[in-house]
Image (cartoon, rainbow, N blue to C red; front, side):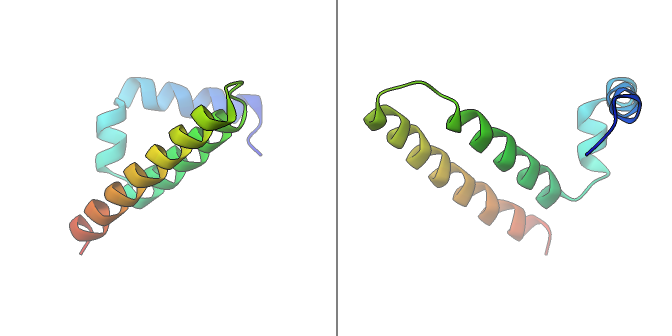
Length: 76
């Protein structure tokens, strides 16, 4: 867990450096892992019909599979 001071520092670095620059200097698979975790946490809190929630999760899973394939190709 990151403390508030460290989190503030990291956000300031990203803000000053720019997200695109940060992505260029970090493994794409790490960004994908972070995106996956963040979206799954948000999807778990969605208060929607079970069918809608399941459809969104299925779409997300397909999108993540596609992104994973692209990143694996690019990182070779």
